[in-house]
Structure formats: C-alpha cells, structure tokens
Amino acid sequence: MKRAFLCIICTFLLSNSLIIAQKKERVEYLPNFDKKQLHFGYYLGLNKKSFKIRYNESLSDQGFVGDNYLSVEEAIGFNVGLVVDYKLHDNINLRFEPGLSSNTKTLTYTFQNEIREVPGTYLRMPLLLKFSTNRLDNMRAYVIGGLSYDFNFSSNQDNVDDNSDGQFRMKKNNFMYEVGIGVDLYLYFFKFSPSIRGIFAINNEIVPDDSSGPFSGPYTGFIDYFGTRGVFINFTFE
Image (cartoon, rainbow, N blue to C red; front, side):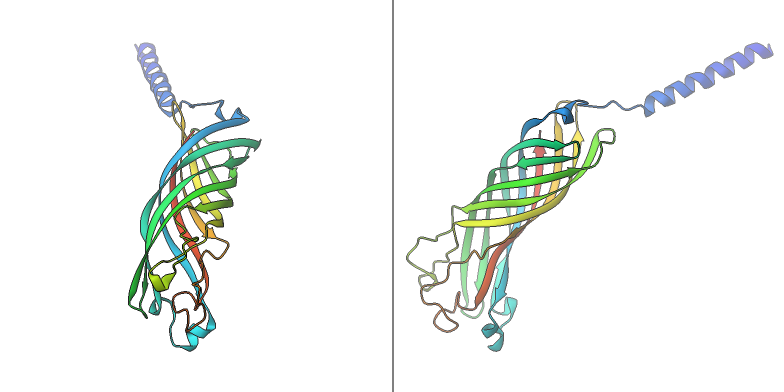
C-alpha cells in the first residue's frame, strides 16, 4: 500500500514538474533571421518637430529673448519609408532608411504680431549604424545613430518674395544627425521593431530675407541659427 502510494506521489510530482517545464519553455521565432547578410523592410511612424533657434547678440541688446520674439508651435506629423539592412557583425548592422517625413509648424513673431505657417515635407536618406545586444528569447535591444541628407520639398527657397511679403523661406538641402533606442521583437512571421529617435539639423536651414540686418530685416536679421529638432517614433517591419 505504501509503495503504491509513493508511486502515485512520485508520478504526480514528475508530471507536475514536466508541466511546469513545458510552460517555462518558450518557442523561438525566426531562429535564422539574424544569419541573413542582407534583408529589407519598411517603417511607419509619427514625429513631433520644432526648431532650435539661436539669436544674434543684437537681439538680446534690444531686450528680446526666445519666445519673447519668436515662438514655435509644435505639431504631430508622420513618417514612412523603406529599410535596407546589411549585417557587418553579429551585433552591428549598417542600415539605409530612405523615406518621407511630413510636419507643419506655426511660427509667431510676437514683436511683429504676425504668424507664419511653415510646412515641411522632407525626403530623408539616413545612413545609420545599429548596435544590438545578444538575442534573449524573442527580444533584442539596440541603439542606433547616424547621418541623413534631407531634401525639403516645401522649402520655398526659390521664391522671390520674402517675409516682407508673408513668405517664410527655408533651404532645400539639409543635413541631420539622429540617435535613438529600440527593441527587436521576433514574431511568428516577421520582426517588429519599435524605436524612438531624436533628429537634429546640422546646418542653418533658414534663408535670410533679401534685406537683412537687425533693423532692415526684422524677421530673419536677428536669427543666427535656425534648425529642425524633432522626436520620431517608428514602427519597423522586417
């Protein structure tokens, strides 16, 4: 009787251990995905852009600083593009992510009591390096960064009119750098990678008014640097 009872207890404990082990065992999706030398994908996302503005010292001498002269109302836009990924190392990938980014900002010249709508549709061509951790089950964290050439379709650069005629002008050709973090999630059919990135203009994007100077050009004469700053949230499918 005791032996039968012990056999039942042992069988129960063994069965219970197997059930727990099976529950803990995880299925690894796309086990060979990272062995590819080259693969492709696409991304969709949102952005929130503003401008970094640096003023000439002459503006401070006049008693105007920051929003006291020019304020920026941020807006939400969208991103869409393609991904070309080339593996350089088990933990390092070179990525080319051409795409479109669209957003509209509102500038308010408080001194002039005037408003300018500044649309921005950019063709973005980032070349990035992605540094990934080792894979843990179906997840892999990473940091990413690099440089981008951005062509502004809405620049208004070639317009002969300037702010004196209500036209705000920006340069067509621009360069940005971006840095971000994200995570690769390996799913049954594809890899899903949400990421958040900061985008920063390198060059000065503003086109000065034809009559520049602190008094003859009140819209651009005080501005020393005017460049895009933004936060991008991308959802990548590979």
